[in-house]
Image: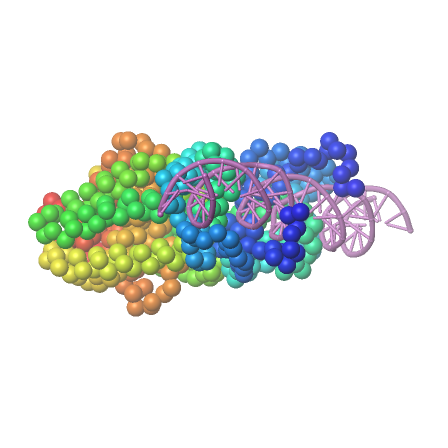
Length: 252
Length: 252
DNA sequence: CGACAATATGAGTATTTACTCGTATATTAC
DNA sequence: GTAATATACGAGTAAATACTCATATTGTCG
């Protein structure tokens, strides 16, 4: 019965999403075949339909919220699309009307977080550019703001960062992202007069990696408040002393 | 036929390992019921049998090698136990004679890598302890050696670090590990006279996190040789300047 | 050799779970 | 109103794949 037109399906649509990661030779035959209207192109990983009516937006929102809660509460391993739909109070069919596959939901969640962080970074970049503001202060503010953002959905963010398997695509995107930020930082380093200029590109990468790692660690690690404050201080110290130009003293 | 004794199996043994991660309510009924001898206790995640005879050791080695190759070549998503066995030239049954589940193979691989790194860290700790050696030099050697180790199986290590989903257990182990290293570093910081002492514990965590992140980045990122050297220089600079005591100059 | 343990085999199974599609209902357009 | 479209539904399916177990082979030790 589902068997219909043997040719039509067969090895369709990458079932199983191959262990959650990049699905190989993903054919995704006829991404959607009937009904026109709000349907999106056949690019994999793009929503099939864009929500047009308010209730559709509600549905999408409910799905994302349910997914977020599930993943935060139960961890990635226990998060299934059917559970998400159930929890969201919508049918599994509706879920797949707006998300082409499970990964897309994860991606959406990640993008949401990313979007929340973007303005923080923008602001910090502007502050770093401002020669009137001490480097250390600018960096401190960056840290504090990033940590604030991470504190909004701490569990969710922790799981997303630590437990969710990273697809190759996601990894590549991150690298690309890093490149952009590094360019930005290089500009800043060149403009300011109080920074070392040994190798701006290398420096920018180091700064990026260190900041990212420390932020994640601070955000995801059970907070012993005392230490936390000290760690922020120390992190800021390390980064600011590092970039600041100094009349040399001991070679070390 | 396989149906035998309906009660005996049924909901046995956590099939599927639940998306590769921590399997919930994993019952693992009768881990192994017949045959005595080299059988291990029923602790999950421990080998079922320890290899006794040379050929058994061969088998285990072949399995691990095959797994390493597969994961390095195809990525985590395409690595299945059956493929591993095939590639290793042993039967799937033999595989499960020495590994209780798929995760155990991954764990083994990770432990192998960890074991390779252990002595490097030990040596570096000793060098860091030696007041006659400049901090910067000790740190540089640490970096160089770590990168050497990572260069042995670069693909494998990259996938293990970036693609493989981390179980909660693994995450907890890492935290525990960090604690141990941090204690060690705190001791060193206290002994040396040329280091700042603002907050040794915080400092040690910062050092650990930064070193780990930078090493991983340097090891897993396509190597533009020029930059690579510069990055090592810069990383060493950042860390050593950070720990070194300085007559203060500008507050920043 | 003979008994007993260690090791190897691999077809078969159970289970999970992402995803489809025919159909029903709500909304909008005219 | 009614046609057309957007949305919702959810039982059912296919496929993947981790893992078992009955049986066969090989090694060891007296």
